[in-house]
Image 1 (cartoon, one colour):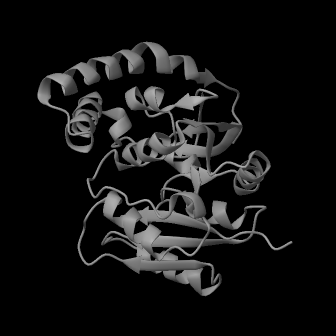
Image 2 (cartoon, helix red, strand yellow; image 1 turned 90 degrees about the vertical axis):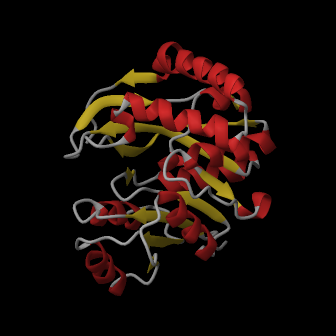
Length: 260
């Protein structure tokens, strides 16, 4: 039986150091019926030339360039619009997938007859060295749980276009992935992960994850702008968000032995 096409959305900006590794991790998938939709956000380094060369040898790699630097949300949205696959998945230009990632997730979706899943993932530093840390998630993730903490690693999620359609992504520059999964969970009510690590997340020195102030600022914006809450209610939600971040989510972060 012919396998189903999976569209892999990769937004990129000045990613010459990592982009070939990210693409290679898709090319090395045991599941081979995929397309990469790469959208360049006006890189000024060698990113586009690297991608162009890789695309010459693999017609499954398709790329385009935004007319002006617009942020990850706009780039992802362009990628989704150009996707042809029944399934849409996401990978950032500095992250990596494990070889069985797509196959195990497609099997999970098919066997359980569900339109969405995600997985656990491991963390590595900027140079690709393991941080001996695995990020897990609740096994029955509810909308309420996701409302106060983004347990879904964007590099691990995959959804069925036949069920959801192509879900629009917010053009804001940060946390649009969380808003996307909130949209998914609002419809599904509960989501289940593949209960193993299927990807590597690269912790960058300049990433939002390393800035506590940015974390608070952008998450507050989700409550104010995405949900449209008035100031007092948004502040109340932020207090619960911070409580979850400090006292609940750490239970889902596990120490592991180096694996890469």
